[in-house]
Length: 292
Image (tube, rainbow, N blue to C red; front, side, top):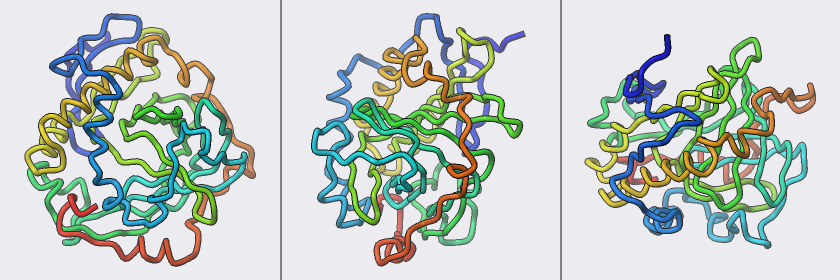
């Protein structure tokens, strides 16, 4: 028996997960009112991204949907930056439609952790965005994932699979539209928007759509990470994602990335590049999540 709409669960980060709809059925908006996608993005691109990335390269990064944006050749190792979080990935394909990468299991990443030694999951929501933090080097755990970033859109889609390679679901990570740079630290810049969608792989054609971490978004408002208006913009972006491709199963859900298999060469874990930029990234710290 399927769970009824409105069922709740706990997300991997310890936040909420609410079964909010199904593909092929009408979607009840989670935003209080209708907001154009461009308006929502403008509210969230508030000028804080440069400080969050603390990387001079951000100042010369080009929007991914700009004709001047660099393209990455298949097999190129790139950096996927979310402010102080930096992940590594390997390019599968890159064209005007968007960027498709593979993140092999064990690939290197820099993550933000509480400075007092707790794990991020041990920090209560009431403190999630207000505790001092430091950077720790980690790696991608679990099976590798395909990640697709449609050019100019405020989301990316991550195709998760189980240990035996079976499709598990698609994670729609809400994030600011990407900016790109070429060179020795080639890659993209974005910022995570806290709220996410999970499209379960079960029941093809009528997959469950879960809204993840709505309570964490509310905590982000209380702790100053977002304003009330910006949080509403994030919810509006989630509604746009459902309407524009999730409900219909449109691109990139319809291209078979959930079953794509890398070659042995592509599946080698990606390492962080050497150099001053990564050394500086490793040394970062802050008093609250507002500091990056």
